[in-house]
Image 1 (cartoon, rainbow, N blue to C red):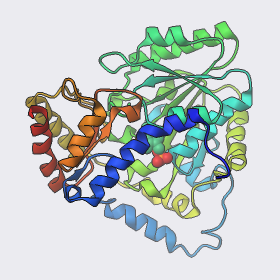
Image 2: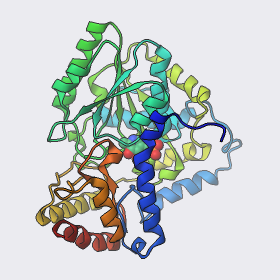
Image 3: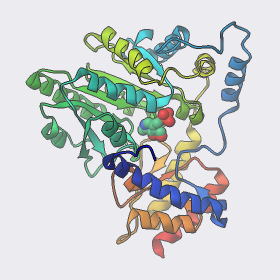
Image 4: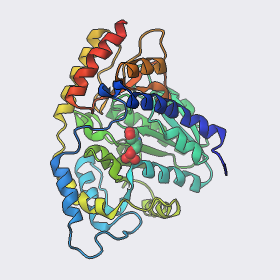
Length: 392
Ligand SMILES: Cc1ncc(COP(=O)(O)O)c(C=O)c1O
């Protein structure tokens, strides 16, 4: 063995690795014919128009259409993304504000690395529960993650955030809408967050970056109730992944969009493109960048998902689960039965055929995350097992 990850990083990998053992047992046994409600893998696959757009990009006769592209991405797809952002977010994005990345994971990492490059402030506040790998990335970059619990209603606890905003706070990192909660932060609370950040910036004399991970924003039923957090603070970036929007999560394309209101935004977006090179993340494949142009025109109507989310939430609530009605996302996040741990419940369900994720993976406890992206037939198999599990 040449080397091993340090213990603090190892411990952040542990919950997912423990779940992976459950998943492997599930996938080798008869239970795998149940339902996979763990990761958001869309079993029905991407829509036909999505596959057509990728195929047509592959067949392009243009010279160099499958060769290297500039760091930050090719200009034409960046222009299309900026135009899409201008339409949706009331901010005058230019194409240079959009840095194309191989998915949101790479986007998050270049943004976090940019905080280290600035040198002086190192704490990053993070409302929890949160997406599983935020603390891992922070730790890996030498930044300190400061978890700040959400309120009982799963909205931002602005009092706790205000208290946690210290002199060495470099950023606030949140997902909008929340993953795993599925709750959108509303305009009023984001506006209040923006005020807190501006006050803290004035107090401490340096910018505090608001990093808004908006990977799941297209799966919110009422987009107007899920404004981009980047609208409410000038030092803001949006991180996004097209993998979710078109159910092509393995194709690794996303972006970081720098707020048009950011002071010296030209320098910051240049830094991000330099980091794409320095960190070796480069750009998404040329194929996916070319496909983006047609993909942006694909109708992403997710009415089926909203319907399914409501029906499954209602069934679980009627069975006695404490389960909030999320505003969007693929997920439900119900409480586990009294006296049971999230991992124990997850193991019990896996033995009965239903794979779900324990809250420990989201730096939380006593809940499980259910993804609603398996087939209709699988959902129909899963529901009676979930209902029965609460009473048994
Ligand atoms: C909130 C959130 N952020 C980031 C990611 C990573 O996205 P990608 O796979 O596109 O890099 C995910 C994926 O599940 C996510 O849910």
